[in-house]
Amino acid sequence: MTEDERILIPAGIMRRTEENVNINNKVKMAFGSKNVIGYNDYKGTAFVVEGKARFFDSGAEFDMMKGKFSFVTRVFRNNSYNG
Image (cartoon, rainbow, N blue to C red; front, side):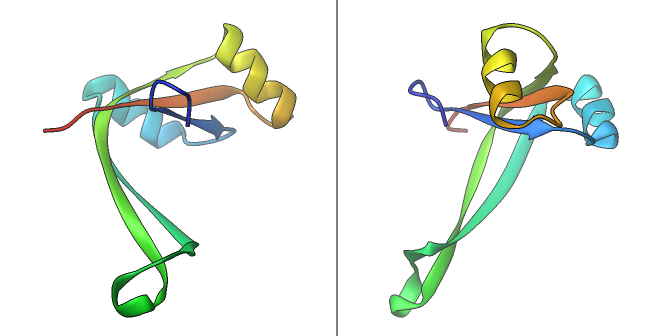
C-alpha cells in the first residue's frame, strides 16, 4: 500500500481480471492475514476494500514494482474509496 492508500499488486497474469477492469473499473477485493488478531481472538482476519482499479505497464510505480518482482508485466492499482 502506498502512502496515499493505493494498493499495488504485481500482475504477471491476471488477463481476465484486466479485461473485466477495462469494462468496469469498480472493484471489491478481499485480503486475509493470519498476522492480525480477529474476532474472539482468533488468529487471522480479512479486510474488504472497494475502489476503482486499473492496470499499467510503465512509470515510476511500475519500475519500483518490477525491481521487487521480476515477473511483473503490469501492475494492478486500486484507488480505495468509501462507498
